[in-house]
Length: 420
Image 1 (cartoon, rainbow, N blue to C red):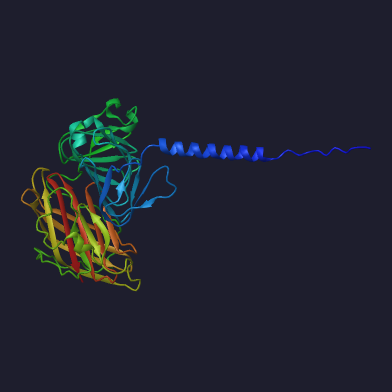
Image 2 (image 1 turned 135 degrees about the vertical axis):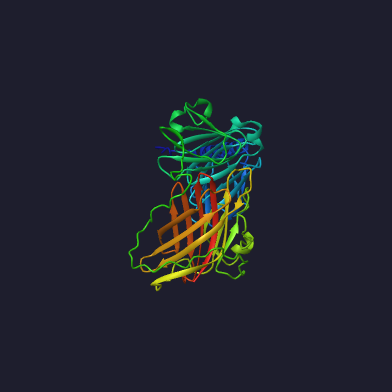
């Protein structure tokens, strides 16, 4: 009798056991990694004021996060402010940083009792150092694509909007600057040709080839106006009548264009009672633009009515102007005269002119220009000497503009409002 042997298949539980053990080990490693991981990052700053839109992004984040007032900011954040926005950041050591429209700034490292490294990618800022940099100025450094900047207990402004130059202006204290290509890194202790700037008010230009003061080209006696940005033919309508000393009155709260002043250090422009508190100005309005420490808030649509045509003449209804001669002195009142504004809607151009006088000005400062008018109702003009930013309401019935003029005697600043 033949006996048939039946093969017995061993159970496969060994494989399942090994797989379960591997999964358990992986889970254990993940748990241990989480236990040993660094604690969550603590904020190094907060956004204390935001007008418009801004966002922040860190290298490990897949998407930028929208910012709101009060939002925390961390080391590694790259902050981007929209072209029509304005923001103020307060750091943990009470340093304050104002970011102008279209600015991108990275917080590389920031410790109250350690290194403070910022990088201005593009745009303009004003920075007031906190107690960390006051205790040890060597802790702080600010880099732009062109320049490296250190401080000695300072209030200063930086403009990095030009591709081949960085502009810096000292308001208080002292700064040390150097072309970035002369530095082994952005620490000024390793930079060749570093320069200390300790005279407030002067504007300096840093390029890869060196550092030079930005000299106002106009002679001291008479400031010459720049050439029109957009020439008009003789068919343009005549300018508005001369306004010698415009009455300054408080504008009604329902006005479609309202000025407000941001809570920044520095004296206000003399004679500006028509500006409104920030919360009131922004209620029911959106920001049209910012000019220095002031913002213009606009009610209604953001685009001009395409049906607007012809030439409109505007009358000045409110104005304030001042001359700043030294950073430690408040601005002295300046008088705006011969103020004129016309808008050619067919050519999309705004023509303006004004004259400024002040006790410390040796001669009146005359300015005139024709500026392109955008579909958004904004008009701008900017040179090293003169800056104008203005806006119209959507229906073309009201206008406003701010101005800054650099003269050998000081800086002229002002804001205006107009009505058809």
